Every structure is written in structure tokens, then in C-alpha cells.
Amino acid sequence: MGRVKGVSTGVGAVVVCSVMLLGVAGLSLADEKGKGAHRHYKGEVVDKAGNLAIKDETGATYSLSEKEAGRQGREFKVGDKVDFTVNENNTLIDVHLAGEKGKHQHVTGKLVHVGLMKKEIKLQTADGEKTFPLLLQETKTKALKEGTEVTVELNEAGTVIDLHEGKHK
Image (cartoon, rainbow, N blue to C red):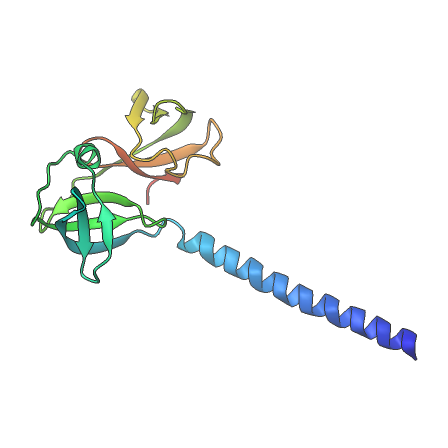
């Protein structure tokens, strides 16, 4: 009788663990689908401890260094109303004056190289090899192997603000 109880307890534990693993796998797949989802906000440029930041409608702030503004191809000042985009890591990737439309470009090619010392990516495109500066070194480049087809999204300054495996849809 004790042996049967031990076996049924073991089987129960295996069933519970299996259900939990399936649930986690489902969440993982859902996360992958939702990954890359950018969120768009409206806000205002504010002074935060002597530096520029953007305050959204909820009161959350996002750092906006002068260097960052330069990479965006713009100059901002306190009081500017802006539309901005953050990536899945809550990192600011695009900023425009309110009402200004972004003129982004998508370029598809095979990954040749991602610079580790210099934040840049090189692609083999139909027009030859092209090198683009990366806004963030972490811009989804870590898991990519050379030769992988990727599409980069460039802001108005020609800086990569996003990257996706495959062709742009």
C-alpha cells in the first residue's frame, strides 16, 4: 500500500510539473510573438537634474541626452512637445516634435558584421555592402549569425533604431 501511494504521488508530481512546463512554454511563445512591440507615447521635454528627459502623459520619464538627440538627428529644448517610441526594454528609440511624421527607411540584406568596439552593423544588400550606425549595441544583434537575412529600420539620421530577422513586412 505504501509503495502504491509513493508511485501515485510521483505520477502526480510529474503531471503537475508537465502542466507547469507547458504553461511556461506557452508564455515563452507568447513573449516571442509580442517581442519587438514598440510603444508610442506623447510627452514633453523636461529638465531632470540638469539633463534633458521626456515626461509622458503618465508622469514616467525617459532620459534624452544631447548625444541621444544628436543620434536622432535633432535638437530638443525644455518645453518641446514630442511623440516618441520606446522598445520592449523601455529604451527610447525614436523622438519627433509633436505632429511631425517620421520618415524611416527599411533596408534588407544579409548580415556581414556587427561591430563590437564600434556600434555599427554591416549588411550585404542588392546595392552592395552598407554600414549603418547602431543606436544601441543591444539592438537585437546578439543572437544573429553572419549570413542571416535581416531588415534594419533607420531613423532620419540614418541610424539603426530597430532590427528584425527576415524581410520587412
